Image 1: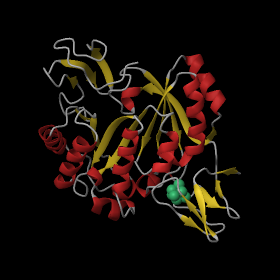
Image 2 (image 1 turned 135 degrees about the vertical axis):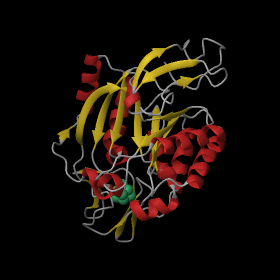
Image 3 (image 1 turned 60 degrees about the horizontal axis):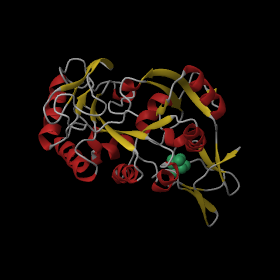
Image 4 (image 1 turned 60 degrees about the vertical axis):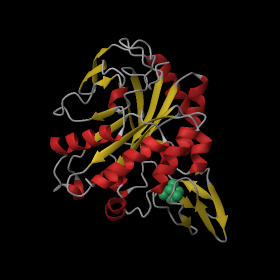
Length: 329
Ligand code: SF4
């Protein structure tokens, strides 16, 4: 059984320090994620190396719009999560695979793919495996990214930061405190903001997603607060994705995000100062295009998540020469 990386002893108990929930575990007890447990006074990982699936897709599907736009990415769907919201859909896995770092890198080289992403559930739960793969990927000049809920501890971010190239931090309901408490069993949303600051400190390229949930997660004050926070603490050029809620499980009676709500939230985000706001709904016109912030020239036109035309001159606008916040090499 593989030993975990971040833990300390507290009397006869073990404190897990991998994510912000910092579970304190008695002998034999599992943490909130149900993947880490105290095994005779050391922290062990259940199902080390297990993943749900791998696939090749365009990086826009992650979504990452400003990190190697238009390129293929090899994605690994990890298992396990520390947030109940996602767990409701992931308690059962039809197929579980074992992932070996050397084989993964070999496959990517054979397919000539230079981007690797860990996404779907919560990659933090597979930290030790991912850390090993990221170190190997660096040697082969493979760029790496995580799609995370933002509850990774600062200690873990410090460790992984120099090997990680990009993140998309997926926020739900504009990080509304009441929503997280009531629906996600999370008392404190501040770790999301701490981890965003930590990723920035370690020079990891950041994009932010926000799933807008009608009726129960559409608080306008929380949204304004989130947008202001991004501008004041990260940058007004951070790509910001408004994501569609689709009914599932316990939330099957909540409708999907309507166009009017997207229009309101995207208008507010831009009015408050965010420069690159995207809406992931085909019925909201123009919001998948990347425009030059300076002259409004359409730099990257997309249809859904597919690029129709890329007019960038490297990382600059071909019309006015303005430098755009994106990574292309
Ligand atoms: S990873 Fe997070 S949820 Fe799992 S045991 Fe550690 S602190 Fe708890």
